[in-house]
Structure formats: C-alpha cells, structure tokens
Image: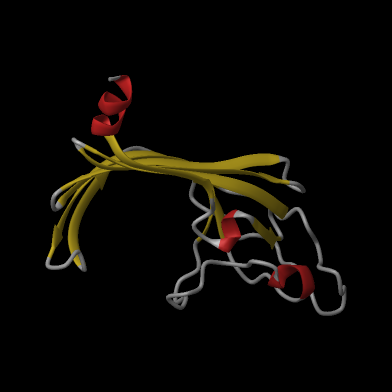
Length: 174
C-alpha cells in the first residue's frame, strides 16, 4: 500500500549531477584563478506541479573563495514560482555578445579583458508563461550586494601574451 501512495505523490523523479553551463564546472579568470565546481539537479512531477531543485558550488583556488548558486522552481500550469540564492563572480562589461559569459579557459593562455564584481543575492519571483512557453513575464525581487574584487593572477601560461590588468573599481553596496 505504501508503494502506491509513494507513486501517487511522485509521478516522476530525476536526480543527477549536472551543471547548467561549462563555466560552472571549470574556468579561469584573473580574479579567481582556477575555479572548479560541481552541480546537482533534482526534478519531479507531483500533484502540486513540476518541481526543479538546482545547485552548484565550487572553489576559486587563487582567490580562496567559495562560490555557488541554489534555486527552487515550482511550475503549475503557466505559472512558475522561484526562490534563488547565490554568491557569484559576475562580469560587468558592457557591449558583450549574447553567448559571452566571461572567460572559460581563454584567460589561461591569452587575455582576460573582463571586469568583475563579487555578487551575493537572494530572491523570490513569479513568472507567467504565454504561448507554447516561448514567452514570459517575470517579476523577481530580493536583496543583493556587490563588492569589488582584486586581481589574483598577473599573467597566464605565456607571460608575453597575457599581462592581466587590475580589475576596475566598483561602487560597492546593495
């Protein structure tokens, strides 16, 4: 009888080790040096809706700092409820391309021409999806704090080609 109850509550459950982007597993920057991380994802479909729990954590070896993100998303029909928390090293450069998420391994060999900020945030949100889920309106609110970070690497593997400049000063605050 318990097996039937368990199946009624959780129709489908998938748990796996996974990162959403390659940069969540490994990257190099002049602030963090080598960053290595891992991630987990749990998805289930229950009577109350589709639930997705995601998290990733990692270590910036030259900066000696832990970074990561965690989120919970519950989707019921065309509505999604979200809760997030994170400590990330975010790129603040203007005029980047859509696929540009910062240095992955290029800083190891050539140039790291990005500006960074240490961002901590927590938020809750609500999204309404339209059409075939292709469009959405989203409202997300919560506190965030940005802090400046210093360069920890002066050059990549090839010193002549990879002199790393200091990170630009940022206006710290929430």
